[in-house]
Length: 230
Image 1: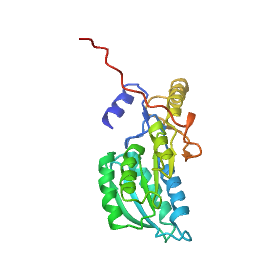
Image 2: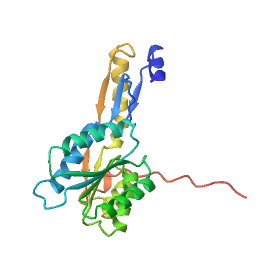
Image 3: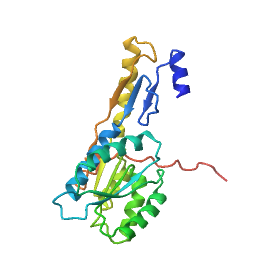
Image 4: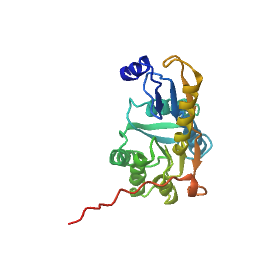
């Protein structure tokens, strides 16, 4: 926060990308995390809520508790889930963006709640661990695994393999374009750094087996091969 304020005080416009701090700088480009959480939870209510004939039991796997993406997503999720009394949140834990942590947490949850209806995770790579734990327990058809994230090929692979029931992509590939628009607006607007706050939200898109392919899944760059010779 101090560094962002200092930059603006020295005449530098500051654009925050996707994970904002508590300080609102000149512009934010990224996902509307509260909206992402709300959309995730709305679909879970359809699958596990009143009239679904399920247990209504839901697990939540957060990232880091203090991270903006987790704070805002959990607010959207909980505000929506609590509207249906049939929904029971049986676990709400942070896996700190780590797939192994998500796997271990979920393995315990699925033992304690064998009738679990859905698992909601706040990042695809992390939630892949939760999906693996559910698959290991033989419950992947029963438990609907949801995740949010950037929409990479790795996320789409999880959908195609049946590990994710649905994936909510915040379309990360649009953020470079939006960052350029934000910079252009700030530089041409003539406003003094630190005196305005603009938000450029990317549009969330549901991915399932019908559309988790092609242009909806951006490719993950391969690590460079070594060119060293003996």
